[in-house]
Image (cartoon, rainbow, N blue to C red; front, side):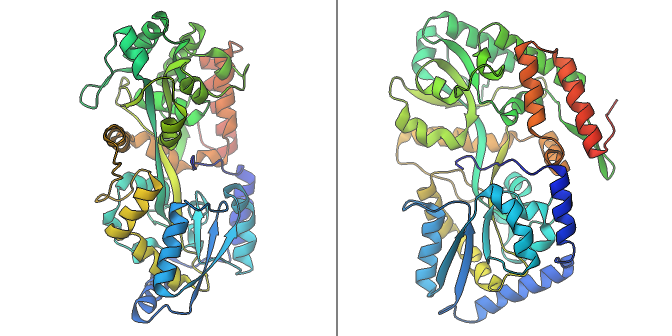
Length: 442
């Protein structure tokens, strides 16, 4: 990833692919039976001389933690590894043909395939004990959109989070919030203005130009993009709570506390670089940037602080990539054997220490040797507990298969002053409703 949450295809493409795959999948009971049989076969005999075909999104480097884990296991078991490299975006267009022709890899690193086409993948509850995993990671990264089936297991796992400039805080006489005593979003905006007024930074607060970062504010204030309506959904993006959230965000940009040109579309500058070079005191971004912060931030000390509380709660958005096993793979028994090995506490801990990421297993955490980094990672790992039920419902709706970038673009138009916050969200609600055939909630 290190930002692993990728954009999905448009609704029509997703629908077309689903039709093309309808003849390829089996029922849930058949999946469970065949997967279990594959695992038992792998456990009963030696893997010596067998092979595994692994589909990865990019060519692995020498320090790629997952690649090295696969190689270690393969050397121990005498298994030959063949790798296929197809980017996450290209996987979405090429997988249907692979499934139709039964020319499938045995193990896939993916962000969406297992959720778009769950019938094509092994039910992972037949491979490992799902109680080992953090529930939110399992539901968001691994679960089928339309059922409770876990069609993939989280390997890379990330969360949104807040970074801050320790030196700028000290200059402004501001004490950073803690997990036990977090700020509210109102306090963040107020302190961002103080930081800016102190002269230590150009901007008090900056945020990635991503609707997934903006949505942290929405979820914290009790908002959502959709609401559950029986077996379907209703569009909720233009509810009063969401309009109020966007109005406050627009005001922070208008007041100059945030770099307005970025969210208004007048600049292609990266907010992360604003933070790294000392121009912004607080950054809303994600855990995938932590390691680069340790090497790129040289002008000041940086820290990690907990996400602020909104009118409803604190909020975070998690994502990541999964390991999935195609149901019709030639060597799915070998892939299942690796997955069982990988998610043992000893092996996953070694992987995590090399990956330097967050853990999807309850019993394992990354333990940096550096004291400051260890404290930061505790805060990062704790962000997982702020995932809201509203985010879970939004994800289960797969709304992005109908509209995606349009949402961010309407937010940017509101920030630029072209349209009001209410008009922006009303317009997107109408587009999402028309594409999804969901009614707009009253």
